[in-house]
Length: 340
Image (tube, rainbow, N blue to C red):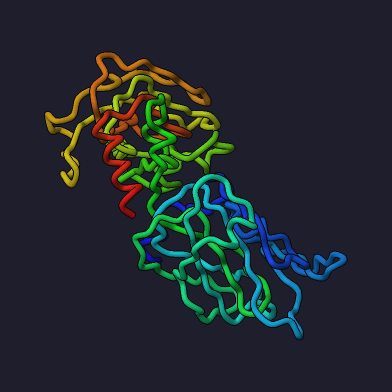
């Protein structure tokens, strides 16, 4: 697996992305490209248009020149590090080639506005195989808001993933109480004790977890230690309210949790758990299964990272850290948004 696939999928439907237009979707809808689940297939399920596929499929181009395309509005703007073009189950009807370009347009442009945008090729025309995942790295430091997938000349693609670093628009965060840990604001789980069932970034995802798989869940511990995750916040901020949500975790929620904070200069390694640099945001407290919990932060101070300890193990559906950016934190976001 390529390293970039561990980064958030900026084009995921459950992260608020949308396929806003496509040249053709005669056989299967464009929206299937960004669904969160793995592509499904059931043989001999024929509808009025033929065998049904869990993906995007266009008609056969005959005398029409060019290629088919689909435009995805990213749910989270950012720097694209790589894309995955998955032709799962498309064995006799996959496109022989694909390419990807991207653009950055502020606001909420329609298709007509995007036609005149400055598109940049991020993946050149590349051969594809049937029923296969193609992991294609991207070498660019530009921030993009939209990507356009081309299939040459036609066919079917099951899923399209766009992995990268989230870069939030600071205008939408300035002067407001926001979730400092949110994935859509640039928060990330940078270290974690255990990823057996699911990743720690899941705790920071938009919206509510619909089931256990959409949170972070660890294996059962058989020792005297505890599980933990370290979260890098969107930027330096002052947290005022902590939400620890165990919704859907009925028999596998932790018994207790604790949250520590630390304020680190840019580029400084995260200190060890026993370092005096960490300070307590939430003392060890008992929590309940299948319950959203909210705790006020006493004596709040600036932090750039937090450490969530769960005792002894289990799952957390969502972790929210509501507060405001400091002037230094906002300046860092403004610089990044303008520089890339």
